[in-house]
Image 1: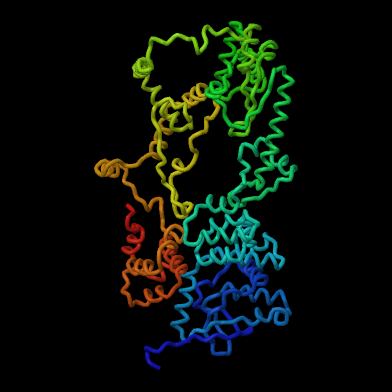
Image 2 (image 1 turned 30 degrees about the vertical axis):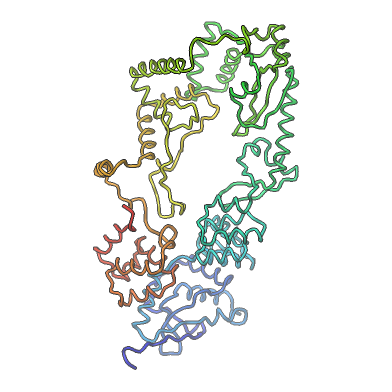
Length: 614
């Protein structure tokens, strides 16, 4: 046999009594708990991966790769005296045999260096098989040394159509996309949407929308208003999205009907309060324009007057309320004084006006009260409830002030406010921090708007970790809130809080400017992309081709094309190449040690970025 000849490895089955652990095996000591878990897994799911060893000269074999599996099989033999009869494949496991010591030594190192987790598709199938064989999630978790929550998530995918799991295994869709299919019980529809996913980059939202175009989230204002139980009682179906931890309501028409009935009930309760009429609106907001379009006049509550002592006490309680320092008694006292200041409608006012009831975007009931219809205005004027207009729109004299002049005068007034604001720079800075950190919709104090400056890839942040200040605590939604009260409470948090809010929201808006300005900024901040991003299978390697990964492997390790380490990498499947590169970038000690990665190569790996990144 020449040196150029290829020596093929044989495979044979051996009784467990003929197998022993080789001194070449790196895993000489394994925790008993790990052996217990693996034995349970093998008993339930079988021996998925063969052992590897070398003949010992006495008709047996020494195991160089698969030491944990060997121990687990030996443990099963101890526990089951009839193992050879009930599970002969475990009592006589297959062993791949190395032709010589050098090959055996290479296998011993290579298996441990290249060790990687199962592909998610393989996990899903393995967990599903164990469950069908009677294993509980707790048992599966122990067998695979994972959390029960992880098992439940994989089992939720085990019921997917086989075509979806096949697509995941082939890396045609990612795990997040596969999880979207759990919301559907219509297999035909699932397969149609799967075809749309092949070769297309669809977001999770687009996939879910395609699977259930009419489904409504439980965060929808209608669902929050009526409650899931009422919806289900009316025959509405509920579907869960385990991975987004949200509930989907499949029957939008039923939800609309329950919503309308419930809103009508609320309207009926208001009729008992003495209003001339009560109506409902299905809009989520009614503004001043609504009054103008429908010709309503609006009257207001008759407010009470606080005594000097009550007024002083009210101010004290207001400050305590803004600081969240009111006890139960204080809250009751504050509510009572607040009711006096807010006032109420008189019986006469209610007899000539009405109410429109609606549900806001948060699912809360709101009302537009004291509305007088066009047809009721004359009667309301006669009753003294509504003041008589001095002139009608038809006979009103033309204003001597033109609209252009009116606009100019308005700008003068605004200029006066801006002029005065220069005397309060701290107030302006606090207002800017407040506007950036709160979603104020159309009520912004400054004529500034922010754009979406994306800093998050579509790979769901795998291998990507920014400072929490850029990803947590988005601007607070201030829809329908008292902005004056909110801003007073915000300022009480102090200058450090103002500066912190400004810094984090301005950082989130950083785009860089032109080339020279960007260069200046980077000189001071010294950004390093690899501080926050490491290439992984999910975020990079799984999205480029196999030849690209082979070139990168050789470049990082300074290998010629015909080097055995390079040629063996070339023969790997795309997913295996991605996994090996991910382990290399992750700093896997065994792999780097087996590859004899030098300090210079390690620095190259630590600094490497794909072309186009900086």
